[in-house]
Image 1 (cartoon, rainbow, N blue to C red):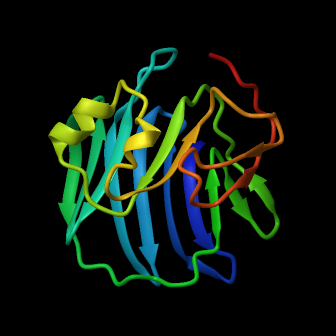
Image 2 (image 1 turned 90 degrees about the vertical axis):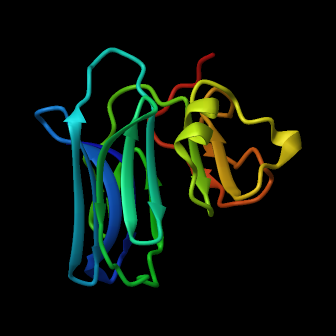
Length: 171
């Protein structure tokens, strides 16, 4: 298993949101909101090839995009689960350690507070976001081609700063 991101409540094992690639290469998005589980099973991801993943929640609709194409979706009613306090890019971080690290290259990680349309996803999946424009709803923007090998900050100047482990920066 290779984790793309995880967001969990360290006190509740049934309160998390994560995306990962299983051993068989299948892309998964799983949300457990205090026992209500939503799981999207995407396609097998091609290894050693650049891929773009976007996960969108719009009302009750959960959609997974791979390279600008809708590859899995479902409708589900999930209550907002407060208290998720361990947001991690590239691993599953729990109280007992770091698990399922992402082994590969990651160019960027964006967090939006608004749902993105398929056209918006396609338009920016191969572009850097112009930070000067501060696009509506972009709450965090992490680029992995800049940094100092120990910390990362959102390129927007807002959002959560992070500590880096086992990372190399490259252009």
